[in-house]
Amino acid sequence: LLRPSKDEFDALEDFGSEGWNWESPCPHPFSSQFEKTHSSGLSANDAKKYPALPESDLHGTDGGGRAHLEIFPGFWTELHRILFDTAEALGIPRNLEPVHGNTAGTSTCFPSIDPRTSSRSHIATAYFEPNQARKNLLVLPNAQVLRVSVL
Image 1 (spheres, rainbow, N blue to C red):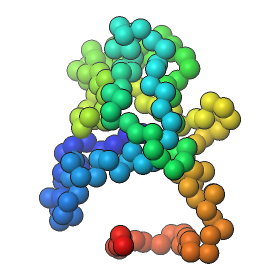
Image 2 (spheres, rainbow, N blue to C red; image 1 turned 135 degrees about the horizontal axis):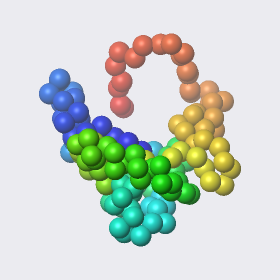
Image 3 (cartoon, rainbow, N blue to C red; image 1 turned 90 degrees about the vertical axis):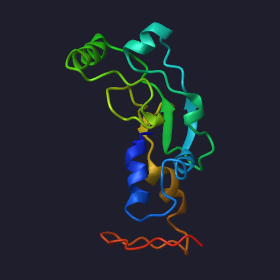
Image 4 (cartoon, helix red, strand yellow; image 1 turned 90 degrees about the horizontal axis):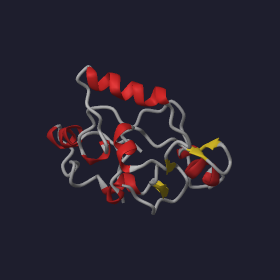
């Protein structure tokens, strides 16, 4: 799961959304995460080469579905490392954990493929499909949301 940077979150409050800043909404994205397997299968030194060192306390496990599977790729190629080396040579640093508030740089993201089913896991499969027949759910395609009220 990728989150906006600290500056982007804080800008929400600056533009008038009181209480929406880096400190307040950060726990909410955790609710969409379900599983976490943070091991990349790499040595600590190789994990730095492939920017694959997530901080466990920044990733949640209490989500209601399998929307974001935090599992690293099952393989690491030389091309992957060359990409990071080239970016670094151009002045773009490796970012071992972009979820801590600084999204600048290159990093390895968790894919959203469920390794048990080889299918993509996303919000629709995790939340919409199991609930689409509910009588209190109304989906309006191509509708513009002007306000969200939390009761």
